[in-house]
Image (tube, rainbow over all chains, first blue to last red; front, side, top):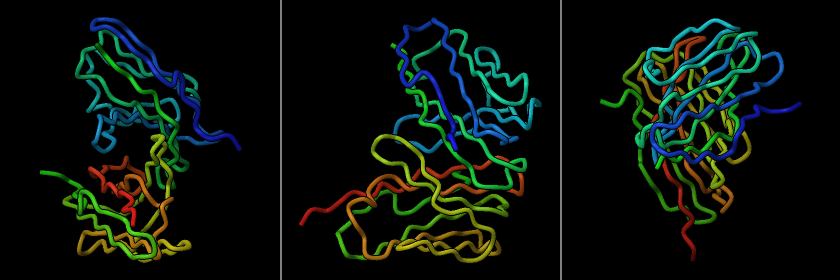
Length: 114
Length: 109
């Protein structure tokens, strides 16, 4: 069974540029999460979905970040105008049963904003 | 303050010895998960816990929801146990809140 797949693996941008991250969760997992992990810190939740519905996006900087999961499978996280403070690894994770089961992470996208 | 606090922040791992990591919560947690982030950055799930104890090989973890803490014990440590260990707590079917991690560094003889 394939794990959680993320792309790209790395991204390097200038401030003000836009970037999109893509995630394909484990087949059949109804819940999908996006976490931001700054260097030497723990993952911090940005947004999560159950099927196609957003359950919690309270930590997503809504002026520049957006996330969608239109068919309840793959998801895209977009940063409209990147800032140096956005430099971090962006992790996607998925689980069954609305999060009441084990969380599985993808390899992440390492973003550097110059 | 930190909702999920891990200790120690770092520890030296000598082969063959035992180590204990701890996680204290200031949020109401009904589940705990422990992860190992390897040097390549991948987060590997070690345990999913409801209150109680689980064991897997040389690893053993316990979760006490009444006292709001969890522990991870590493027995007979090996170099492959190196990396950063994260605990994460959550309510049933809610998103997990992560701690800041415990960095386990191999101590060469």
